[in-house]
Length: 414
Image (cartoon, rainbow, N blue to C red):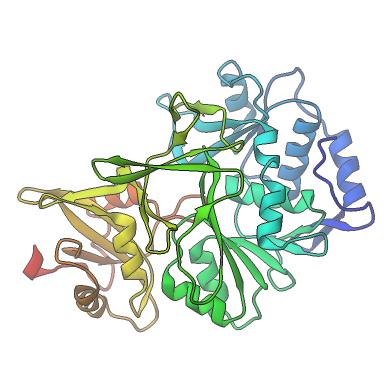
């Protein structure tokens, strides 16, 4: 069997929804799992339970067959001839499809994931005695990796935050943990979006050890840092990764070379160079302390009044404002500006949209300041990130303007 069951047979490997599965029980379930006939890829749907996902993934890997995580068997059969040789895991990406409507998937070897397990365990200080909570569906690559990583170190994988010693979470999920009355896990491994400074301070004040990393489905781990109070908030290269920062029109673009890179993308392409570096187009900046701060995806840049504004940069400022639970920023066409910056914020109880917009004027430069505001619940991808594409569609269709409080346009900046 693929060596992903580090716990001894009588220890609990999985605990989901009150159901406990010992390591030996999981091993037996993997050995007797019934898979589709043949040697082709195996579909593992997103709507099955976490124990079934883990069992199917381990069974496929154990028998040397690629597993399409988050896709149907029909999807797996359809892309069988398109998967690169050596594919062990084919991971669907949140909200993305190929031109024919089939899932856009990242194809990678099992070794490219397992190579990062020991460095992450050392960075986070995790071991067999930990109870590791995952906070999202296992069809999402960061959550599936969290589960497989915990199994590899012999720890228990669980959805029970109340008993967890460590948790893998997005910043949004971490914010909920920090604000809850219950005692949080002692370690939080955070990814999926930039960690706002205010949230970092709140988490450390509650005694949470933060391990933040930047990565992408195509690249796996690229940057990481274990944050302590008062240190530079940037990230450094994850162990085993070589990074290169290259100038482009929108700023500095991050490239990486490592054993963790995917084989390729089915239904898309992966940007590589002749030296083995790859990028997904994320922009970065160097901090005064020599670290790297990720600004956001280059294709999320908004060109307004001749200036380039990164949506993630504006969102980080908005999330730091009192009364804002979360925020997303998009651009919409404008006759004079090219694009107009639009902010959609999730308000905390009692907060007023007009007060948030007023506070934003002191936090943002005039070119970054949103000119149209909405208070609404953000649509999200399967991984919990705000779905900007859906927001653009809803704004263009006028579907966000019907709730309370109503949206408004800042008259001074229209």
